[in-house]
Amino acid sequence: HHETAINKLTEYYKANPKPNDLRLVLDKTRSGTGLAVEYTRQVGFHEGLLRSGSATDLALAIEDYDLWKFNIADSKAIATWVNNFKRTPSEFGTIVSRFEVERMAIILGGKTIMELIEESAEKRLNEGPCGHVPFDGRLYPVYMVQPEFTSLTLGYINQRIVEGVAITWMYLRKTDQFKFSIRSKKGLVALPIAEYYGGGGHETACGFTLDADDPRVLPMIGVKTKEELLK
Image (cartoon, rainbow, N blue to C red; front, top):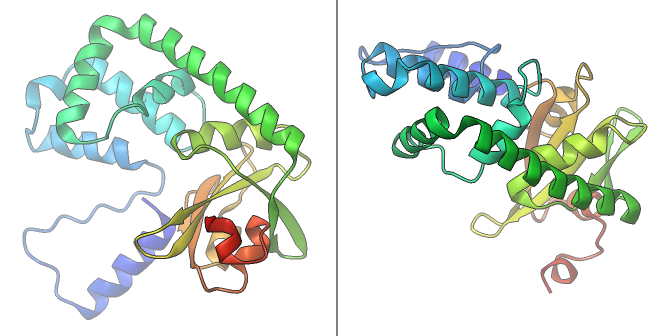
């Protein structure tokens, strides 16, 4: 469902035989959660669970959030609560079961977490960006935010800044790389920024990864040396 993934898969299977048991689904209008739930329902996995109305409602709410559309009531609150869990088949079963009987409590809990995230985002706004990502003659601000709440924090920030696009970063110690996540206001396409730096994603929710020794990284995150960052 990501533009870059579709391009890579298309090119790969032009040069390599496709296994007979492989079903390739390309749909840029969906999120990973939406596609996964639809597929597992079709093949009968978790059959009873995924045929419930609650499973459909939950999947659509998560997809609405993942695609950064917000056309479904309380999708932000629901997805915020879901982000406390791992998105694995077994965990999803637990989430759906709870969602069936605790929907209103879950929505209220999600809204409470959102209020705390907004307070954190307001603090980041007051502190100002730590660095900037250059693209097409403009500088897009980079903020330090909690990884668990990247989307919501950046979503709050990008509503308040002139650029309408907010970025954060995370150091990946295992691979010695920096991962940059981008979120933009609804209707404002940020994907070209990610693609310029070799990344991809959705139009308003995307990102890219750069090696730690890439000279472009440190100015983006506002430090002079990698050692200074890792102290």
